[in-house]
Image 1 (spheres, rainbow, N blue to C red):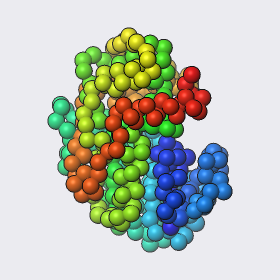
Image 2: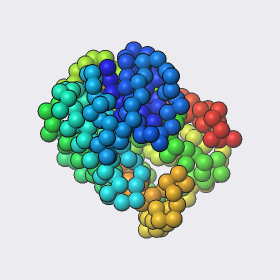
Image 3: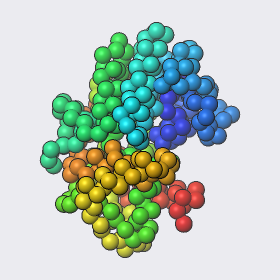
Image 4: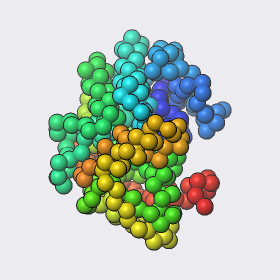
Length: 320
């Protein structure tokens, strides 16, 4: 049986329905979480708890063979908020696993844990991590907790992920529907991306292979894009002409501060910590290790993936 944390997040909502087709799952969720997607579904047991408060974890681990730890905080006002979920929450899970003698964990980490590349040369897994955001710093700390544990692990550093249930990219798409393409700073920006179905595919590959080999892997679709490539693709699929607006970095940080201070999380367009990442020029990494060791190849082109994503947004009332 597999325990999954972060079930009600973006990745969890896409992963669990496919994982449950072949494995018995248990999901650990807060009592305040929306679990309609998983209620009364075969192969899914629901237990309540909170990894930050260290409640319910021990009971959730009963008869568990491995853990997929996908719970994370991606938006926060300060270091403490990120720390409580990404660091303390991970530490509580690891301690409970060691107590229960559950030996295998797949940690869903992030490219942010390593930080941006200094130029157009993709980072490899041997690069010295230099995270530049609070989110990245706390995800790197979570990686270190897993690495120092007695567990057998795989750590996946996913790049920018998009697809159904993602609300972050949707915020940007709504600007494009209005004919605006805001970019923080000046000059070309380069990045890797991955569609959620491709990320889920590689997670399933690792779980099914049962190779928890104490390795870190970057995960992307194997291609490099400019930010303009991505924005142009979205605009083309929406049949919109856009006007690019370059926002100076200090003004962007001020706007992020206003969002952090005055708006609740669900209404924030952007936040300061995310701006620290968005103003970087090179978010590039190599997927050669995971391609070689797990025979991973992305199934979807950018156009195919974005078309499916936009269709999901429209079908679910997020876009007109």
